Image (cartoon, rainbow, N blue to C red; front, top):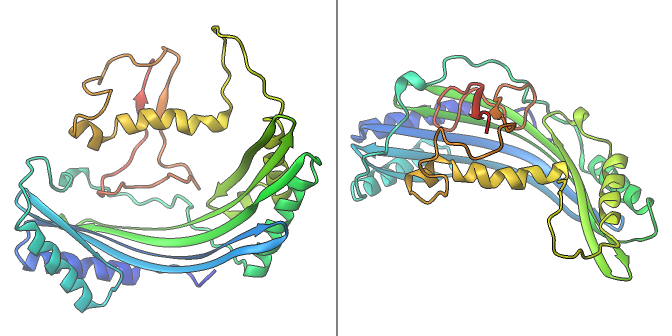
Length: 315
C-alpha cells in the first residue's frame, strides 16, 4: 500500500475553500476533502483476473447564499483549482431555488471531542502477496466438495484514506481509516440446476480478517446448502433468517427513516415517531464509537457529534 495517510494538506485545502466561499459573499459554506489509495485483486480458477491500484483525491464544496445552495467538486487540490471550484458553486447558488430547510447543522451540535477509534491500520501487502491469499481462498472452496463446479473468483482489497470536513462555523474534523476485505463466490450443480453463493469478511485491521481458508470454505458450504431445494405447499410456516440476511431486512427500515425520505414525504414511516412498528422485543440502537468499527465515527457528514442512541425501543 502506498505510504501513510497525512491529512495536513487536506485540512489546508478545506480552509482555502471556506475562505474563498466567504470572500465571494457566501453566507455559509462546507467542504469535504478526501484522499485514498490501495489495491484490489481478483483471482479466478487460479489465474489473476484483475489487479488494480487506485490513488484518488477529491474536494466537494457546498455554498449557501441565504437559503439557496449549490455544490461543485474537483480532483485538483491546487489553490487555483479550488478557487475556480468555489467560484462555480457560488455562480450556481445564485440561480437555485430557495429552500427553508437548507443550511448547516447548528453550531452547538458540532463535535468537540475526537477520540481515537482505532480505525487506521495500514496493511503492508504487495500484489504478489495479495494474489497468493486470494488464490488460497479460492482453492479452499474448491476443495470442499466436487459439487462445487465453478467459481466467480476470490477477491482481496486493501485501502486506506483520509477525510477532512470543515464548515464556516469554524469546525474542522479529520479522520484516517483503513478497510480490508476478502471474499469468494462459488457455483454448485445438482440435477435441478446451478446454485450460487458467497462469503466475505471486512475489517479495519487485516489481522482481524477471517483466514483465507475459512472464507473459501464458508463460501463453498453456503453454496452447497442451496442444493436440493424443494417447494412447499401453501401455508403458514415459521421462518428462520440467516444472520447475513439482516442488513437487507433492516436496510428497508433504515432507508424509510432517513431524513431525506421523510423530508420528501416519500417514506412509509412518515409521522411514525413514537409509534409501535416492531414487536416489543425489538431494540435497535446505534453505537458509533466502537473501536475498529466499520461504521464508527466521532462526527457525521455534517460535523455533528455522534453518540450512542436508541432508534427503536420496545418496538
